[in-house]
Image (cartoon, each protein chain N blue to C red):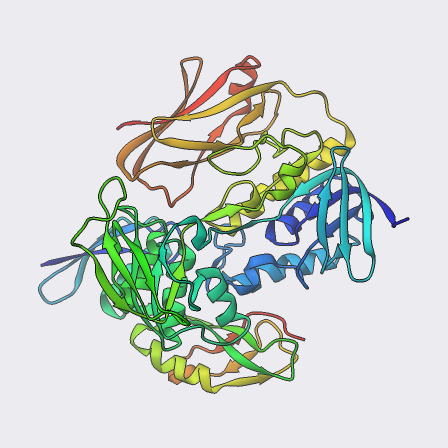
Length: 422
Length: 120
């Protein structure tokens, strides 16, 4: 018979989301000895450990930190508490009665009975297989995040002549990192007509080093048998199909992919959580509770964020939500959020109309917009109207809903977020 | 008169800033910034551009091969590659703590190279 443990709260994942959620649950009244964090890596910190560039913490701490420094602030806070931390521990299964089955080398396979569970597993990179690039399977094709680990953690260079496909932030950051370490980054190809990364990264990672960014351009073939010897790139039309005659061969030994992040939701699906097809994360209410009672989600497993500062803020909400659930809260009455006119999704997807605090709704847009207005309405009443000089898919936006507006709504009402003419 | 359009890199917001210069190259107007750091960045960008540098340094006798480092302040942009040569020559003995100085007064810039992670 394997070991069985009992905790009020089990947090799955010890990155910035999991740590902030666990600390917030404690601050909201859950005894620290009744909280456990399960982390599959050897130490807490998650992906921040390999994000050695700065830019973290400007919103949350008001200072510019590197990824490891940002993580360490929370590691120190966790270590000061009696919160149980199990590293090197893999969660295998979640059950519908809120049991967490996990394993590690010391304890074997064991079961934890939880009153509440917070999912904070983060996300992973979209792989090459999802892109259908023709060609052989030589060494030298890797995700930008894998390359980041090779350089920043393992301390070696995975290549010397690099083409980067996709202009996501990790790809841009790696373009600079590889260049500083002596590699030649030939170009960044982006299939969309705009970059998926932050403007500042285009400037400080590409323009600073004269690395060309080709928009509406993609890699159509990988060449090489044992090692990549080059790639063929081509411009694409508005249906994203390669335009014949625009093919160019570029010699390189490495192809890095920075083509999007996918929330890591295998565990969420085991218990049949209702998922949002756009975010690829669970649908949640304003406290980040999923469709399954007592199961919460926060950070990149819920929606891929641009900034860790927002992951922290969101996870604090989830921690508070889990604490309220454990202590017992009245049944919620939901209103539903919906994005239209270029608003691709909203998080949360539903809000308890009896919530007594202001609710921040995050969203992303489907295209680049200039000089527009972000408008929020409910039953024809305007709740928010702000001019935006620029909106882009790579930059997450938000609006706020006041508790007095929520109170006036009826259960089942729709809060509509849309992009309108200025 | 010349106008320079700049994207601020001081924070992830990435504000578009317009700097107007007269014929002698003096700044006559700056607009579009939304904080003090932005104004300072724009002013530096048209006179003497600076960037902070992050990299890794070899660790001797530790639980990791390398430790991440950063420049304690921004350094002149044109010195980035020279700075990397210094960083790649350096090493540090474990244990390493956040804030440990690896290189003092990097290339005479006044910036130090400091560790940004804990290595046992």
